[in-house]
Length: 81
Image (cartoon, rainbow, N blue to C red; front, side, top):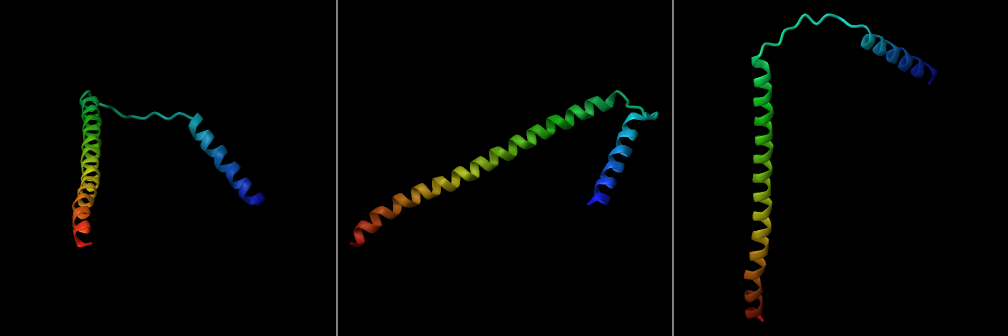
């Protein structure tokens, strides 16, 4: 148990040191990157909306079928008696 605590402490200390020490990124984001990110976010929102719309339609169709199947069964059951 002591060994696990020591390992966690060492990993935490190492992670903390890496966060404090800054390195040069040497990276460049061109102006088109922002537009691409916005397009991706909008496409993701539209996709989520379409998914839930189709999901809602399928669920309501299931309940609609159950509701009308019960109505059809009731008159048939009363005629058999």
